[in-house]
Image 1 (cartoon, helix red, strand yellow):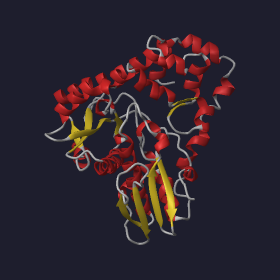
Image 2 (cartoon, rainbow, N blue to C red):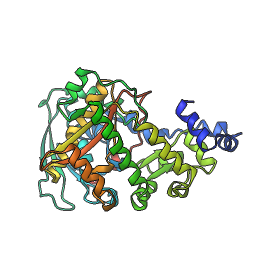
Image 3 (cartoon, rainbow, N blue to C red):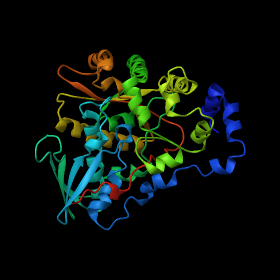
Image 4 (cartoon, rainbow, N blue to C red):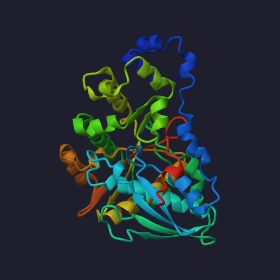
Length: 372
């Protein structure tokens, strides 16, 4: 058991957890949601170049793990890509900006994956304009038109690390490589200011009932829920199952600011956010859907580059969100990080993190296809 989990059990009543789990060892040993992460092993196993690329693209990072993408096959070499309106985040992402950035991550990873088999992708963004229900992109796969992108090698190891990072700064060579995709902030005073800002944003969201409730509604607690709906925020494995057995991890508990479970979440991020040696930021002169797709594509390349450099990333986007309770902190983020006329799109922790990345659950590639 890690030090983090020991602290957790001490904070929220480890004796209760173990009492609830007593005699349930064989049950807990089976609680890893293997079926929901099988998509990672299945990636790249398709004969159709389009499905093969999609099987990798669906592993892209995205807000609240909503996986908002859909694909329609067009002819023998084309795809039409959509953002699924049923996977909106109306409280924390009311204009769909973050989800569109997620679509950009998906598109970039699809292009990178296609290159691994030598396929180029002729991409047209918003071919019918930026209206609701319109396709986000049309893609045509062209064999022999691309060389393998070196970043593809890092896809299986990529993942968000929501843990305390080592105090050392990223190596200068890593900062230089990452600088092609985002601004890397390592100055001690600037990092300290961002630690405070991102903590204030995280806490403001946690204490805003509608925004926090959206997160709670998307929690998948335990193997059964995760495998039934392999999207949202997975809380699986023996540790979380133990908390659920003890009644310490329920949606009602997580909605109650006075509960031990809620207070544990606060204490966790009080520990994690200060343990951040550097930040990554993307700010843009534009703020339309085309810009958001481009931001997603840049972030995907940043994330894979960081993985290749042995670095961990953890987006903290609360202060970029456009709802009333976040307006003051969003203005602070703009003043701190954006130039005149720019909009802050991405803020993320960056550093050397502990342990291996745990694959996040994903729907299989067949769930993306919406062919008529």
